[in-house]
Length: 508
Image (tube, rainbow, N blue to C red; front, top):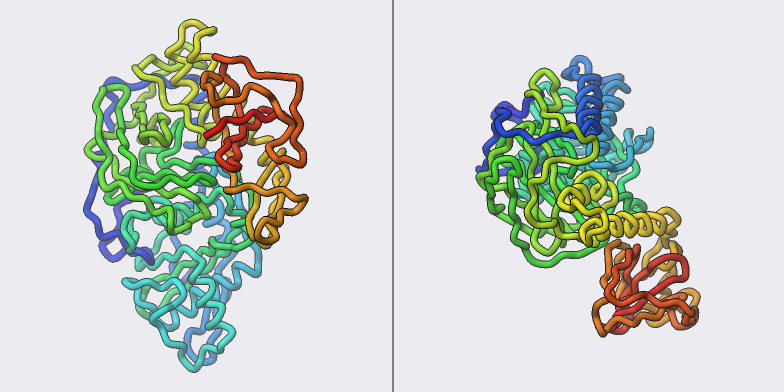
């Protein structure tokens, strides 16, 4: 697949920035890949090879051709188009360890109505069309269709294109977010990679202006109340990652946090662990207030002048927020330079001088694949503090995931808190169901707490909530570290979940 588009190719939100990253495909001083990583690379390459590549045009797009004048009829696209687009969506979501999503007839019909309405009115592809704010309903489109088009366009990724792309090219453009009118906020990507997304609607129609109006509905209120499938989504992702998704102009990198809010713009450093080249990220932005993908934090940036080489390993350090590494490969197997295979199936070469930050927002799969591996490969002694901390981090993520598994959500949110995987709902001021009250909504995140601070109580309690709180006969040991799967703040006290009915507290 190529990411070089014709000049007339546009998304509904087109990027006007000219920032670029340098991409190379040489294989000098390459990283070593473990046998598991090589197997994963081959699996992704085979999956990509088997994805449908057929281009669509006005002759083969429709199962039922729309009638875009009176009497207006939205028509329908072929199942082949819908299935192809969904295949690409789920292929990309799998690259980021996110669950597959599905589609259904009602959402597809509404997306098709929206695409056909925009095609009929020849909606301007160079202006914001979410909600059709500047458009006027023609007489031949009834109020029902117009209302659907306004509502669905406001909750969808929109793609306007004059090229006869494949269904997958549309999704790739949304994922890389190269042609984003709003700049580098990566909003389309955030919705595609939402950790709460479960369904979508797909539609497309050609207008007389030769633009194909593509609609992918993504924002469903019910999804916003669901538990996040993953706490952290980074682009590029940790582990192995296709270099093609970083090639081209104006492809911003990003970090999304599902349940943790970061303010400000942190310093971000990208390092090639094979050559030692270091680059400071440019145009770092915080778009957390946008709420794209139902993420609490949305950080975007460009990687500066770092040279991206297939077969190399890179470390991304988002200061005091998150740190991880990834290895690049070619998703098109025919373009793949030879990858160096490590004799050890579990460890890679020791290239990191300083241990990565152990962030409470890390996901267990990320830690298993890269972050923990980078820590472990520095420790020759399995009993060293570094090895112990990395093992604790895995334990913490397992605790957190066990809570996520059974999390219940209030369909109408006044406020919510979580304990032992169950929800307690705020019914009004100081009125929590089961009489539970917290002063700030807790983060359902994981990490490691060190018992080396005088402000930390060594007693273990059954609950952070007074009505359930009992002091057990057990204690934590000073100068040791413990994994926690959840933290809750109540009245200047932070509580850490160590296991079922096992909480410790630290006075802030």
